[in-house]
Image (tube, rainbow over all chains, first blue to last red; front, side, top):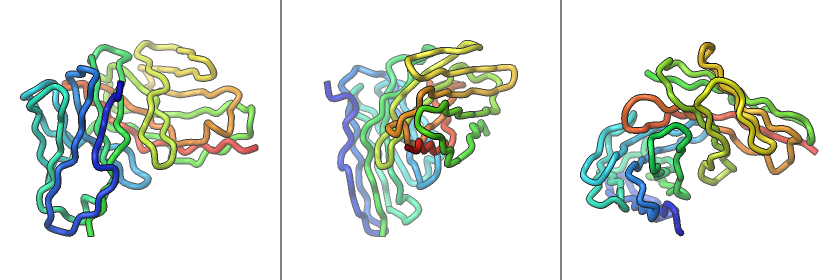
Length: 114
Length: 111
């Protein structure tokens, strides 16, 4: 059981380039999330999905896009990369919104924009 | 803006002591509360969840919740050097099962 898998683990982008961060989970979780974490800061929600075909903005969505065509996959697209998008990106999933159900996190993608 | 506040630390405790980590939150409608541990360069991992007022114990960890005071805490008994990490408090409320995270408290357990 792989859990939540993120690829790539590291990436360096030049300003203005685009890329897609991949996230796949094999736990049949309906809820999926993208967070970013800047040094010394907590996690900020970028986008989330409550099921296939349904996505919504989080706290910091500007500069990003997502899609959710299947239950398993939730890719995050960066268009026109900017230095402000240098961060560690975590994908997470959750089975149920009931009290006590937390998130399972992927191992993260460390992105540097130069 | 829903806020979750934590003292950034570092909180230093000697090995074998009790470490006490605190968190306050602003949204009175928050439903459940989580503590995550994050080692440097790693992803957060869930330690405890709590949603009823009072204490919840799991091994060396005890989570405490006081909804009237909007306060959550995590106690770590018999602290070990391996407990040295950043502890993130997270609060769930509103639609979409979203968690709002604090900035974390760095814990250092010294020999």
